[in-house]
Amino acid sequence: MNILRTPSENFNNLKDYSFEENYIEFSITLDAVDTVMPVRMHFIDENKDSEDIVLLLHGEPTWSYLYRHMIPILVKAGKRVIAPDLIGFGKSDKLPDRESYTYENHIDWTSNIIKKLDLKNITFFGQDWGGLIGLRLVADNPDLFSGMVLANTSLPIGKGSTPGFDAWKKYSQIVEIFNSGKIIQNASLRNLSDDEIAAYNAPFPDDSYLACARQFPTLVPMNPEDPSVQENIAAWEVLKRFDKPVLTIFGSKDPVMLGQEKYFQKMIPGTSGMNHQIVEAAHFIQEDQPELLANSIINLYN
Image 1 (cartoon, rainbow, N blue to C red):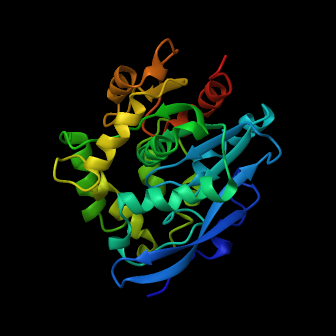
Image 2 (image 1 turned 90 degrees about the vertical axis):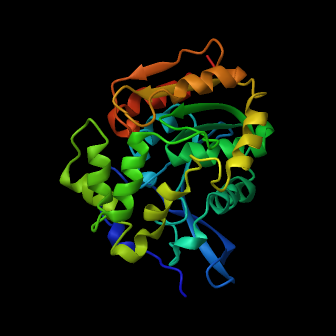
């Protein structure tokens, strides 16, 4: 069973995406065959000399291309910007079996970015699955993080699903052609160009590359018996004591996530006194409000 790697030519001449490639390598276990294999994770790392670090984590079914409009603004403000492609997405390697894509594995794999780059003084931004993964990383190492901006995300603990999420989960499993670009377009207010839609599809030459994109919706711990519920409950015990700045910015047109910001504001002490916002945006708020998000990160500590 071989690791899949999207051909590099799929990423040639992408609109507004000319960032230098960076990679880390580590070993993972393919659960289906109990085999250890090396994998490569891609990440953007701009303005490497700065000690003021911003970690941008994407979700489903996107990749670091989602941050193409935010990164230049953050770099201009003096930030070092790191934006990984999760394993299974973007320029990172893809696994051929869905069973190896678990919530806990994603946390372990993504933590390698922090460990191998020896990151600290991190401002974390997470949206969608970027929040589900990143909040766990914060809970595991709160001293490494200076603050957070959370957008259209959550950290579920098995208290039940919603009709909006159930509809998305069902669609992701039964749709014959999983067109990431069109999915992102349908969950954004801004009209994406044909080139932008093609860029979101670039990592997935055929359906064999889409194992993670199809698996992700099944991994959200919405019900009490789901895996990772107890781990998320434990993470909340840490986040309840996180008193560094935490800002929430949610989209007014996100039918699945809107409302989750209230739970963050209730439970995390660092949200107190912050200028939380509900803005004109759908789920992929990075497409609809990139300048606002970038400037909110820049001004988080002011």
